[in-house]
Image: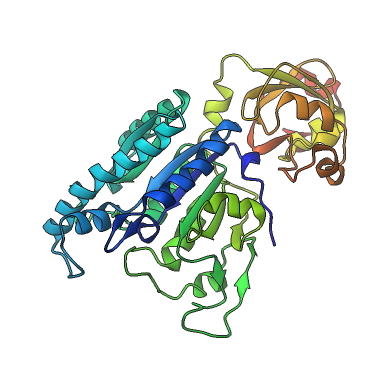
Length: 388
Ligand code: GLU
């Protein structure tokens, strides 16, 4: 099975389905939440930023209000969301607080992520929470969202949030443990798919339209989320949250489907990288690596000649060419100590030296912005137009 080192990711959005958090009769599954938050706290202590997209407001409100299983009218489910959300947010704040983590509630509507100005506003709020070390706990603002203008499912909402703030991984935890060639509850011959490189129409067709009773999102909305996330350069994992500590389970190799990020993503946060005022470190690269970077590749440890500065994974570093000039800036995927250990190594040797599987690139191309080059220099360096 895949063992996935979650702490090798820089920023992760974890989406939690209603059926995991809420039991129809007893309400909030507090022990499960506490165990999940243990996982979140561990990742956070390892330097990975975590955002939570938590469903469950309507389901929890329904239980608290004693509404049973009947179909709710719009205003009833909005009232249920109102009652449920306040309890849900309180539970998150309480559990994160046990680990000394602060949380901030963010409720968004579809319009908040679709309209540019509001989108930038939400993004700024979430980014600021992260900068302050708080864990954003996000849900759709179900109390005011109308039937026509709402996400309705938190899978796509989570994908939008993940791409908005440049997450490199989105994890969808629900009662399904991954993608199958057909909905497994309906087709006994369905077989499990561990890795998806590209979400093709054939992959989309595997989804069917099944959804569990408490949550709105079926496999279809999960694959829609996958398209959004991978298209923006983030990986996505669909995994079961039925067991306790589901994030630890993923790391131990529990069944899960990994969707690889698109090799040619579109990213808005490059401007943010380029705009960092003071890089935390410097990475010297050889001529071959520099050429590779300029043709759109990632910086691999093999091309690294020198590492300086006391940076942590996710910090901005300056990339220095053989001529001593800054060739670009990027978010580094390793702490300085590990970067020193693997400088000059082939990708295949990295796991042996570090003792864990991690992202191969020192600076991933998605996290990289090259400096504009002085026009005269190009001739001196003997490079051709293709590099420009
Ligand atoms: N926003 C809804 C809630 O909190 C959940 C939507 C979903 O299940 O995806 O109840």
